[in-house]
Length: 110
Image 1: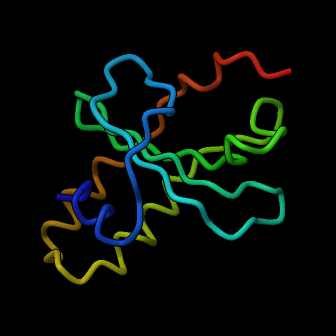
Image 2 (image 1 turned 180 degrees about the vertical axis):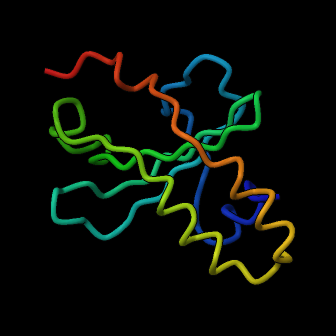
């Protein structure tokens, strides 16, 4: 349900997202640059039900490969709060799925 709601508000599929182990789906969305330069959400869905979000510099920027990358599940909570098509019970179930996978920590970034 959350995947479909994200599509409705502008998140999109991309063939270029690095797929981590047990990842079943992924979406991205460009955002206004934050103070640290990150300007893209990468939301990943996993077979164990976890939904993770990374904030990073977009892949067309040279800093994508060496720049800041951080987890943003708190941003997913904000997005979820603003979705009107879901009941509070559905939102609670989805929110419990937000967690951090640390696969990106293993990516070489020089």
